[in-house]
Structure formats: C-alpha cells, structure tokens
Length: 311
Image (cartoon, rainbow, N blue to C red):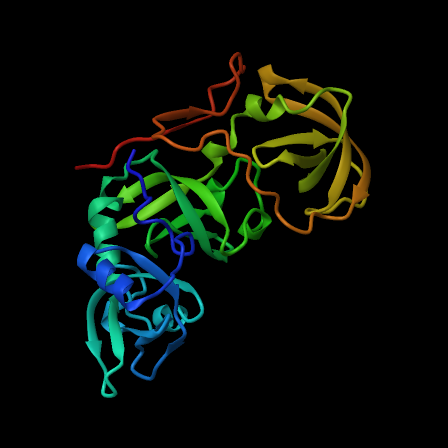
C-alpha cells in the first residue's frame, strides 16, 4: 500500500530547528515542513516564527479549494496555535531587510493528493489524527490536513452514543478507507475492522473470570455490556443500570457458535475517565474482506467486503 511518511497527518512531523540556510535548502528540495501558526492577521494570512525567520502564509495558500469548507474563514482562523504543514515557495526581504519565508499549505495538500491520497483504495490502512468529534462521527486528518469522515457506526462493533467514548481530538489512530469519491475527492473511513474479530477479542477472556465492562444498552430482557470495543455480552436484568455505567461482570459462558457471551453483573463501578488506547489487530496493508464472526457461526457470516471504486 502507499506510505504516508512524506505526507503524514499534521502534528506528527518533527518541527525545526529553523535557520535561514535550512529553509533555503528546504525550498530548493521541495521538502515538507511543519510549525504551529502564531497568529492570523486581518487579511486572514497566517504568521509563523521559524527561528530568526518570519514565515508568512497568504490566505489563498492555507487550504486547497477542493477541501470541504476551504472557503470558510474559520478554516483559516482555527489554524492558530496548531501544527500546520507547508513548503517554502520563496524567501524575500521585508521593508527592514529581514528575511521572510513565503509558505504554502495548499501546494503540500495538492502534492499529497497526487502522490499519496489518489492511490488509496477501499481497504487501505493509514495513519490518521482525530481533528474533531461530532455526534455522527469523527473527522480525521489522513495526510497534511486533508480531512476524511469516520461515521460513528464504523468506529467499533460495539455501539457507542458518541465518538468521545473512543477518541480525543489530537489522538493518533489507524483507520482503513471504506469508500472513495474520486470526483469530489472525499474519503470515508472505517475503524472497527482493525480492532479484531469476535474470536480474537473473545480469546482474551475465560469462563469464570470477573472483568470490567461498560453498559452500552439496557433492554427489558437484560443489558449489553461492552468488554472490548469489538466485543459485548448480555447480562441479566438488573435494576438501576444505565447506559455508560461501569460494571464488574462474571463471565458465565462463551459460545462462539452463537457469537454470544453470557454475563452476570456483580456491581457498578465508576465509568472510565478516558477512552483506552485502541488495541489493533491489523496495522497495515490493504484489506479485501474482513470476517468478524467466528468459524462455525450458525448464521450468515458477519463481514465487511472492500470493493474498489469505479474507475
């Protein structure tokens, strides 16, 4: 699969040290650099401090116009204080004779699209950084500030009320391409396939153990308790349980042929303060077919089939 080492998500590239000769060399070589923007002026240009050199990124160089929301002022204002990738397009002297490096993030994003993102296909596993969380999903930087959507239903097999149950803004994660809209240059991502199959997750637990879990759904006939992001079990009804409660549960049985785990709630616990880091079973490559259900499962297989986009 293509590597995004040259075009990683913003925030993952080392910054500096900055010197005028180093910036000149980077300009000549077309090297992608990264630094945090200091301020946004009234013309919506971004300003950077690159050692003893001032960096200036004009408004039209902040985002490629094909990126969703590029025309909105907030897309520029929100870069202040955040790592921002760029290439150096020119070095000139200001009115006092001090050097000023002219910067472009737009050119880097266009290079990322041509050299990396255009080669992604459904199933491609990439490094991403969470940029924003909404009730419907997470926005991911999949390379140099190019944003892709990760819908909430693709985050994990276990259903969650909000993506903040899994992620925090700025967190580095892995994700796979679910679909690509070449015409609109839009990427939809998925995450659940990287977290392991039912059997891979169930193998971490044994009948007779007592473990921690989180209540994800409360029904008349019992409560579904998440043991891992891709694994839940059903506990008998218990008065007072609410969605989001932490619990300790006794594992009564594990039945792969029915893909069911029977649990008994021992007691309620404080809910987790922070999401646990993802435990990935798949970390690279290109997926073609992922089967969640175990061998011998009595029903039709639960699977994801990744298909190539139309040419």
